[in-house]
Image (cartoon, rainbow, N blue to C red; front, side, top):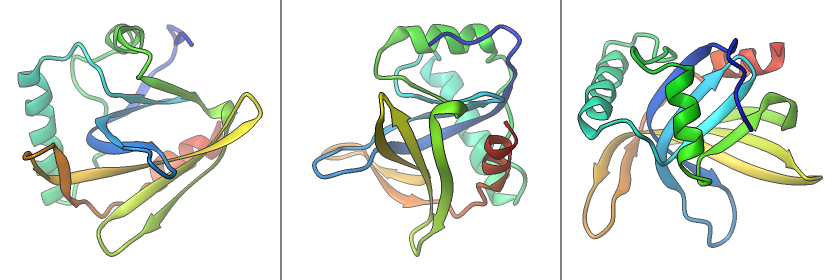
Length: 160
């Protein structure tokens, strides 16, 4: 699904652990990009490791300073987003029109964004959380998650 050139990126969240919920479904690390019409989960990107790390550290700093994290990333526009979407079929685009519900759950370990998607008349559940720290051995897995307020995203979805 292609993006319209007039769409604007509203937020770009790094260090997302997400994917489809279910038995034997393994979540992945990625980025969550929010436009005014879509929610996009990017697991394969053309962004260099260095640039990704810089923006991840900026996001972490905003968390520590209790500032807004729902911001677009400088230098990453619709053109870069389109290139990332086309890079891999593992990158998932969720048009707001296919999302039937979006809410978040505050858990002891962090905040979990839940998204219910209607894909070809089948309801699928996805969840996303922002990682605070990683363990890299034997496989890269999240160690801790952030507590955050997902209301700006949910409000954007409900207003669309």
